[in-house]
Amino acid sequence: MEYNRSRKARDTPAEDKITFEQYQEMKQQITYDIAWQIFDEINEQNDTDKFIDLNCLEFDDAKAITKQKIYDVAREVQLFAREKRQSASSMQHVGPFDAKGHPSKASK
Image 1 (cartoon, rainbow, N blue to C red):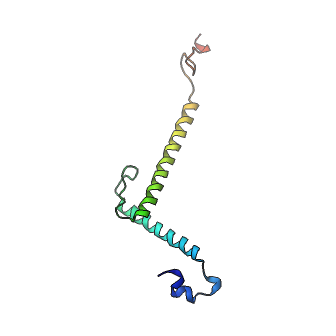
Image 2 (cartoon, rainbow, N blue to C red):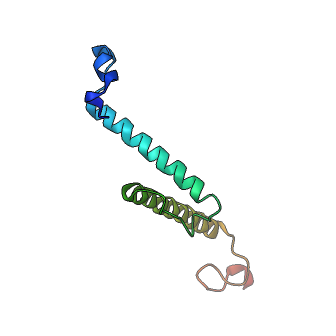
Image 3 (tube, rainbow, N blue to C red):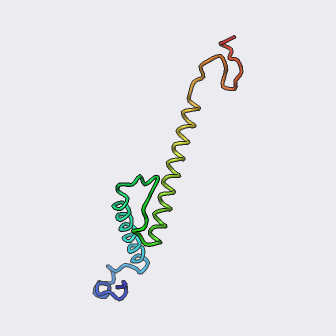
């Protein structure tokens, strides 16, 4: 039942009513939350970084969850790469050559 035609909308005092846009936003959030709950239940046994089952969802929900999973994986890769760069730059050089491959002054 649409918001404007619902009994609750008609019987609610004007100051307690929400706008149609607020209703649509809340409805979308609830739909998205339900889709994530279904996704989590269906994919409980899956390594969701490698395989996800979206057959249980409507197309738009599956598309939104797929985009979010891609974003999450990309963020993890970005953080991993940053950590690798930081650990590589913080390593101290040990040996007869400096970081550029030239003989170090200590080895001369």
